[in-house]
Image (cartoon, rainbow, N blue to C red; front, side):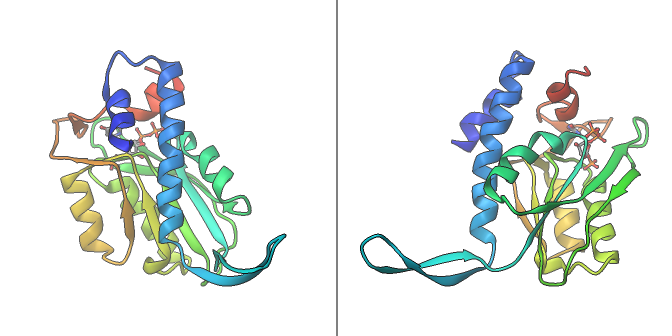
Length: 200
Ligand code: PRP
Ligand code: URA
């Protein structure tokens, strides 16, 4: 299902309305996968018939979308993780150097036990993702408590994140082989933020 949806996002003839709808559908699947990776604990439940053993998420959850493109993924994640707190990191790549600059930071208090889900649909050079993880580590978040959710990543970007932060769990739909001269993912889907927000 994920790859069917991603194929629609990749298609340059997909218009903004459809792009938004499909990005949302895909985000629900990715939110489910993130939920599968979170630590659970057993709970006792009284059903209308008998007692049952169930599970619930063990820890509080913090979601950190990297502005701007990850705002597209946030609503489905909040639908699933209804009590999550949300922190924002604004990172924008310089058009010439592709180096990500931090322009906004607004993080809630994050406890040592919290699970942190970073959202960013695209991992190209990996620079934005690496900066986001570094910022979270600086305030005491443990690597093993981080799940990074993307839609498309490049091999270079994902390898870089894995080498620097081996304990961070990565979820993505597909990995593309190359970056072009302007550090866009090839074949990719173009500029996710521009296509979602209509700023092309
Ligand atoms: C895009 C994308 C990622 C980043 C990935 O954001 O949403 O955050 O580039 O590239 P990297 O791995 O090389 O850092 P962009 O800077 O275009 O900003 P936007 O989300 O506001 O469109
Ligand atoms: N950001 C995007 O949105 N797409 C790319 O291919 C690279 C960075």
